[in-house]
Image (cartoon, rainbow, N blue to C red; front, side):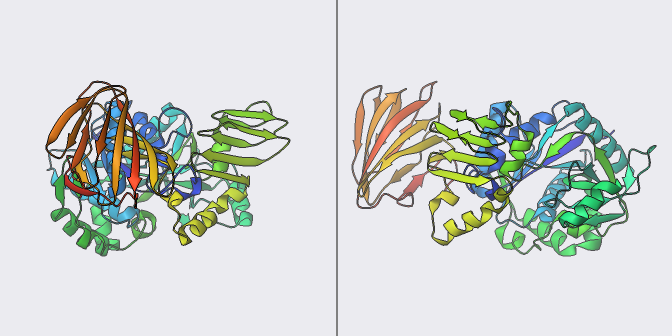
Length: 473
């Protein structure tokens, strides 16, 4: 069997799991079930495959450092991190990865295992066996998709129709079906001929490129040009924005799978969820005796069949049923199960009024560490800043604010104009308005400081960068 190159698609924005998932830190990078994020779980799932190569990750510009950091936490390497300049759906994203593979040369493997970064799969051995069967079929020239046996008449998934045969393990696909009404979903479930479309695939890069040539030449042409004019930036490969944006915004299902005749399906005999709602997390979570799933500091009394998530505060509930409650540092969402499918309506209303809570958390992650906004007033703001070992902020200045830094733990190297000096625990520095400055952690442990900002304008866009080791403008 050929070597397998995983293609991890990590471009989603995750609005259906707001307020925990936001555009600048979507669900695939959040620990929703245990300590690992869904992105990390996707990578760890593959480590037991005997013939696996380093993955190609496709993500957007804003998430690139989260991808790199979460892979580093696992001690895993990548072949390439491809940056999409704009979201154009799955067909162009996969095309970019296929072109990257073919550009490596004929001596390398070109079998692609395409996986979304935000799925939850239980039953690892069954998943790995399914992957192996799919790879064997792809080597015979098939475009392979993985289908999940439905457990309920779900209306949020697309379906795949096959002709079941008990002796077969790979089935020709007879039809791809759009998300159905509940009435149709019930008939699909009863027939036994329909599977959920998981959005996972395996095929060779050559076969996928050939299918694009035949069925979606626009995607192929502009993806090839975007890759030809791509620029290497640190560990990232930036596709040409000018050309990639001209790709048709189209999924692989519409572009290739529904139009090709060499498509087959391998059933996935594992518990699978795309974690598309808070209700799906309740369904997959470990429940207490009253049917509740809780995470964080939660106290319940006479509560049943509910999902309660506490991030920063004590959350209590009394005498309620069938609720979803999600608390974060800067937001609280309460709904009933079933209504959580409409969370996007709330997110859209917040966007209409330019509320930052749709994009940013109070705690913001940067390539050098993170900061948490503790308090804010008309002319002041207080942050807790953590800088990772060996990392530093950019050399920068602010036109509208001064800053006071107090070291809580660790060692800080401070640059302020022409002065460079060290600070340790309980020592402080003042950064005047307009001064060029940088904060660096030369130590082996995280550096934590409290920053007090004061001035007429405290927005994050009041930053003029002069030098940045992470390539940020």
